[in-house]
Image (cartoon, rainbow, N blue to C red; front, side):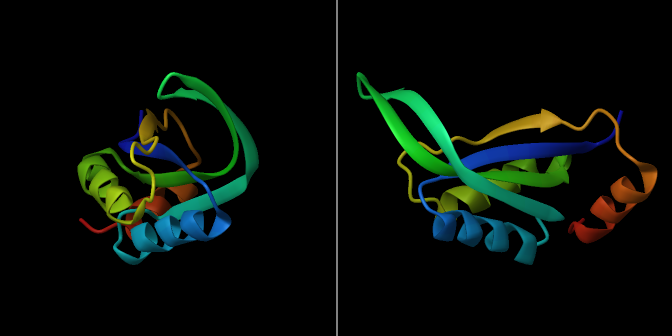
Length: 106
């Protein structure tokens, strides 16, 4: 098991997703953020089923930095209630995980 996680968040535009990615990497809260999209999202919001094109940010970071990373996402995220969820990285290549850890503030 590794001490690293992937945080997922979505944004309405590629520009918003890019702003989130740069904000995290510049502060050492993410080693890498991959932006994918557009993706199709279907969700319930204020009692209505909504459909939207969104951009997915996959944030690679350390579990111990989750709180700071969440706060940093909230600082620049335009959504009222942004998706911010994290999953553990159970395994990974040792050279990639070494690089990941070296990129983070600690």
